[in-house]
Every structure is written in structure tokens, then in C-alpha cells.
Amino acid sequence: MQDNLRTRMGWLHAWVGFIAGLLLFCVFVTGSLAVFDTELTRWLQPEIPPEAPAFSPQSLDHTLPVVHELLLQGEKPFITLPSQRDPFLRVQHHDGYEFLTVPYNPQTGERLQARDTAGGKFFYDLHYTLRTGIYGATLIAAAGLALLVTVGSGIIIHLRGLVSDLLLVRPFASRLRAWLDAHVLASVPFIPFVIMMAYTGTFIRARTLFPPVSYINSIHNIVSPHSTVLVPPKKKREFPGSPSLPPLLQEAEKTLGKDQTSFILFLPQSLLFSRLDMSVPRLKGEHVDFSPFDGHFLRHVLLSTPVTKTQQLMEGIHYARWTGPGLRWLYFLSGIMGAVMFASGSIIFLMKRRKMSGLRVIFRVAEGLTIGFIPGFILATLAFFWANRLLPVSLPERHLAEVHCFFTIWALCTVTGLIWSLLHHSRRGWRMQLSALAFLSICLTPLDFFTRPGASIFHAPTVFAATDLCALFLGLVTLEMVRRL
Image (cartoon, rainbow, N blue to C red; front, top):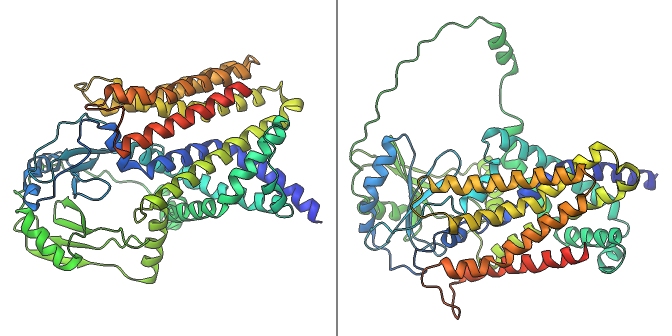
């Protein structure tokens, strides 16, 4: 009976894991990068100095002209205050895809001359919605459910030989055996993290999969005749000049605490001074609101019901805003190992079926997509960093050009992977993309050195050194994979 259960779980683990695994590989890679989204934004804007002067509240008023311009465009801008991870003032807004940011000197309020970029938040948006809005968010939420099924079935499969599988690593064994060992080694030690991220991520997006709607009313709306509704033309937005921000910040800190304000959100009817959620793994969402007309106090919002606290805890664990550098690196490593788990699992799935189904078109398509989604996706990610440094700084809509480079390279990698696979030369497709990936990874360090103002071979700020070293390590690992292919 137990062997029969393991056999059934093996089938479920393989098929659900492969179908959802290619997407989940992309989700885990972008999620790992999103852990350092603030640091990556600083790498992508090398003109900004590594250190900033002390913050002066008077500098806030110098950002108001840009804020008012964004308000007139119908945006909801916010000012992020200096923090340990990012010591600069930034005016940000969401354009429907990315959080676009304008940096300011935190002492004088002077706008810093930095290139327009999608920044590290690009990976956050890609992780969250695949840059397709509610459709991508729904797809990722469904993939999260599939991940829970895959992990559960995998635990049942390996439960009996868990310790022996972990201790037995054979890198020089047959290819299938070596990939199986890599799959177990990348997954079992990090299973708690994978379960935690899958559960919290699915919990956060539960309303996407199960929206609170009345199906009776929905059916009634479909079958009932619709009357013509005249929509009045939109009036041009008008906003009064915002009150001075330093006195409001001082007033907000009486409630939120000294130096505990994270950002200031500008809405048509209120100014929100939000508390910094860096001390506990719960996003409290506490904020103090003022009138945007005369600056008088409106309300202090702190939701503390059991349901709200549960939601805040799930969001806090998943977003990891409260973590320090060490724990943030642990999140990053765990996410990368999760991506390795999906990549190795997809390769094992194909290797086990190559002998019986290798000539079928559906198998060739599956392998072509695997080539496009595993090395191709990482190749597109490296192309994003290269585009950031090579595109002209004065290029209009430069952040969109970076994004277009990413998706263009990813599409090309997927198409070429499919072509080589359908021509029964899939190994050549793997070798070409892995070789290109190794080249872009290893050469990212000299690219950074030659395109970063004031770069020195003997000293580099931590943000730049860490990014370059991670890319170099990826390149060396990829070179070894090409050698063994």
C-alpha cells in the first residue's frame, strides 16, 4: 500500500512539478533578486554616490514640484525617506508596471543626476505579476498552489530515505544520478523555506484565486438587460499646494516614533505618513494622516484585529522588509536553491522520458520551452543589466528600453530553444545559451568597472562588489556545466 502511494505521488510530483516548475523557476529567481531590489537599484544608477549626507527634514519641500506634477497626471506619488539600505530621498510612483524613482540629496533636496532605469523593483513586479497585471498575479497564485502539491508529494516520496539521500552525493556518477542528487540536495535542506514562501505567497494572493463575489448577483447582471449609462467627462485634476512637510513629519513622529517614518504617500484627500516596518516580521501598516489642504491632523490608523494581524504577519514574512543583511542573504540563498530545485527537477523529468518519448513533438516542445525558461530567463536577466550600462543615458523612456531588452532576449532564447529542439539538436541549444550566459556573467564585472564613474580596481562599494561577485560565480558554474554537457 505504501509503495503504491509513493508511485502515485511520484506521478503527481513529476507532472505537476514540471508543468508549474518552469514558471516557478522564474518566480523564485525574480523573488531572490527582489530581496535586494533597493541595492540593485543603486547598482543600476552608478552616478549616485555610495554615501549620502545626513538627512534634513527641510529637504522634503524641495521634492514637492515633482510630486505635484505627478498628482496632476493622476499618479499616486510617495516620498521614501533615507534608510540604512538607501540613504537618499526618493520620489516614486507606479506606472502600472514598475516603481519609477527620482533620487534627491537628503540634506539639500537637490535632484541627483542619475539615469532613468526600471531599477531593482522591475524584478519585484516580475515576481508579483509577471508584468501583466491581474492575469499574471492569478497565474502565479495558481502556481503557488501547484508548488504546495509538488512539495507535499515530494516529501512523501523521499520520506523513507531522507537522511541517506541527503548524505549521498555523487557528482561524478551518471548524469541522471548526479542530477537526482543535486535535486535532493537543493530541495530537502530548504524545504521549510519553500513551504513558508509558497504558503504565505498563496495566502497573500488568496483573493485573486477566490474573490469575494456574489455569484447570484453576477448571473443576474449577465442575464438582465443593460441600460445605457452616460459617463460624464473627466474634469482636469486640480490640487492645492501641499503644506510644508517638515512640521507634519515632526508631528507624525510624536505618534510613530523618532526616525520611524518610512514614506509619505500623497493622495487627493490625505497625506499619509507611514511607519517603518523594520523591527518585527509583521507589516503593521500604521500611518498618521493629515489634510493635503491645510495640514491639519485627520486620523491615526493602526489595525489590530486578529484577522488583520494574521494578514500582516504573512506579508511581513514573505516580503522580508524587517530582515537585516544576514537574514536577507539567507532569503536570497534559499530562493536560489529553490530555483535550482525546479531547474534540476525539470531536467530529470526530460531525461527520464527521452528514451520513450524523445521523438514526439510534444516532448521536443517541452524541452525547447525548458531551454528558454531556464538558461534563457537568466540570460535575459543578465541582458537587462548589460542594457542598463550600455544604453545611452539620454535615451527617452529609457526604463522601457531596458524592459524591452529583457523580454526581447527572453523571447529569442525561447524561440531558438524550440527551433533547436524541434530539429533534434537540443544539446546544441543548451550549449549555445549556457555559453552566452557564462560570457555575460563573467564579463559583467569588467563592464561595471569601465562604465561606473569613479570605479577603482582596489575598492568597490559593497553593492557593486556583491553584484559583480555573484555574477562571476554564476559564470564559473555555468562554464563548468558547459564543459560537462
